[in-house]
Image 1: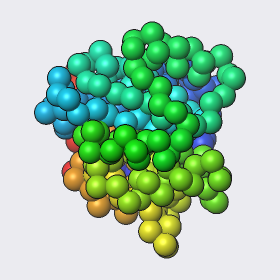
Image 2: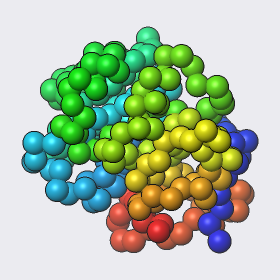
Image 3: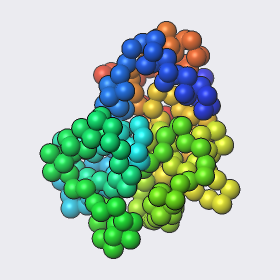
Image 4: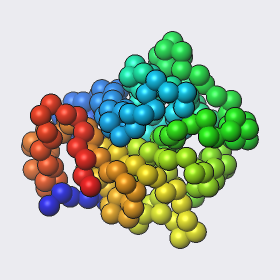
Length: 234
């Protein structure tokens, strides 16, 4: 049976990937973001070459980096991503990822949720939630409360990367209600909160886990079909 990871296990798996198996942060980010873009393209083909855009909401950490990579690949696939990135970092890796998006003519929206709402959200056929990852611990910081509130109340379908933002990694959505994504792309292995996911599409992404690591954590990862980088779990 496929294992669902708690927060400590998730952190330790990442640590092993970096230290024992010598993956770099940008290498894992590229694999993760590409997997998410492929899952979106497979699930929402009607958005390709359409007038509807995809809103990519990025946080300041690795989850946000996954979102930037996802945006770049979606642009290459023929989609129209736009990026909301309210708290940028001066880390060179993230600066380069953002630069790559800008050089691919991906619009960077104002850091203002009211501005996004004023653009009329029906212009977007999908919102990618790449704000918080598995290292998130409540409460939500003030900077992100407006965008989380918008995502909680929008009718536009949401695709969350690894963790629906604002959810507890282990316990799922907050008691007062949280984001309800239509799609979830679990990276490496699903986290415990994914058991509370009630959306339509749950993918596993990130076909890069060494067999030794799989065995060490008893992940019981399923076989990916053919050369696919993603696997539909539900």
